[in-house]
Length: 217
Image 1 (tube, helix red, strand yellow):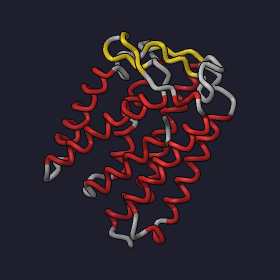
Image 2 (cartoon, rainbow, N blue to C red):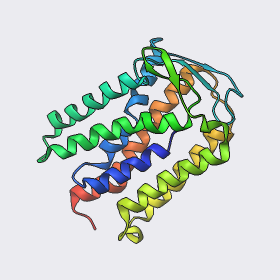
Image 3 (cartoon, one colour):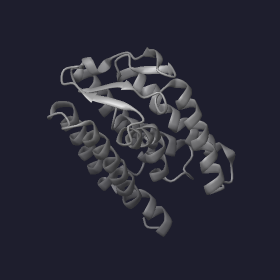
Image 4 (cartoon, rainbow, N blue to C red):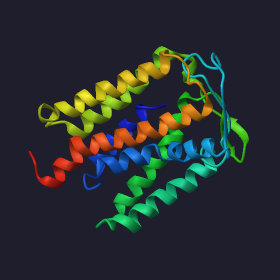
């Protein structure tokens, strides 16, 4: 799962409009934001194995610190507490929403991953394997992303053309990830993931959050 995670960001923004979208963009990818430096530092492991699934060449054979169920629950609590400590929201609900946004990553990964998500440590691995049905997996990504955008921006879609175009661009990147050439190495995959998360969060700040701060229409 890649751009589908961002659909949760938009839906969460609808639940609590006080949370900046860029924060939610980072929250839903927080497990992967941690995963990438773990790969670069050799703490977790991945191999590039074209054909291991029909739409994703990553053999994610060791990632207990970021993608086990126990780790996901831990990092979700960390995300919620960090938002409470840093942002000092008026209502604790906002921190809970951020924490749930973090945990949503594991839930959606469970749907698409082959059985490589450990429940604890590196054991009892699960995953429904939707990546082996590329058309269904791509359709789910698109439905989540644009469903979330619609929930967040309904009533003002006409004033959010830039965000809609950005959504189309995100989906095009997803198509490249699914149907384009595999990454050249594990380090390349991790580095490109970090860059994408930073660029996407910056872009949504520019398109939505900056306007809210400046009071622009």
